[in-house]
Image (cartoon, rainbow, N blue to C red; front, side):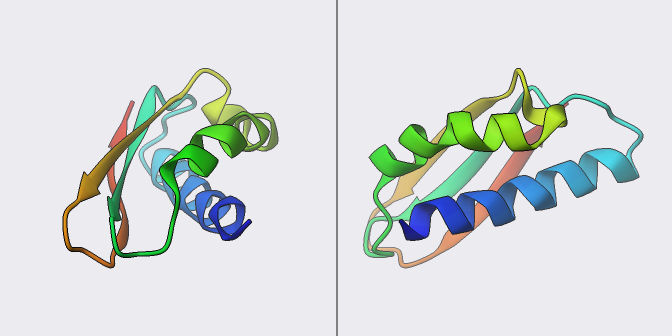
Length: 81
């Protein structure tokens, strides 16, 4: 369930960036997930509909993920407007 919390934090950061750029809707955002981070990409996919409901700017957004071999990081890599 850690995935829900970090996904929510990434969504907040994406929405904040969109607001700072006067953007009302986000088309996608990309997460970079290290395969040794302990996060399970399947759970990010599972919880993303919940996050989309919580943040109107993400209502039509797509979640993209990149897995980094040997990495332990979790990063909001890209936001598409």
